[in-house]
Image (cartoon, rainbow, N blue to C red; front, top):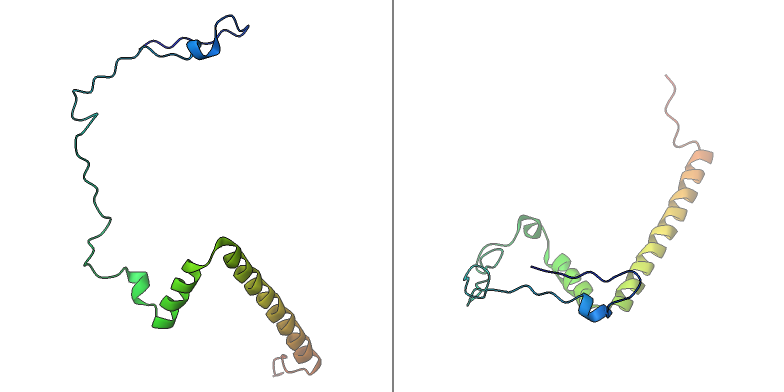
Length: 110
């Protein structure tokens, strides 16, 4: 296997400097198999994975819906969820402040 290196001062043509004179022997069945057999990670008729067994039909429908969204639609859905989480955080903060002022969060004194 011979590989010529390009000279730094550009003396040789760049394409010819990258030429390899390696001889590939295609007689080896290990290197060049005639037929490739691909194996499925799990049999098609086997039971679903454990994590999927805990899902309800609504959850599966939601996964199918999210899987069918385009990238832009998925990003829009994620932004909507982030906004909802932010609004819930604000609401929780207001309720905690309200509870503090009404003294409903204090422990009873012994």
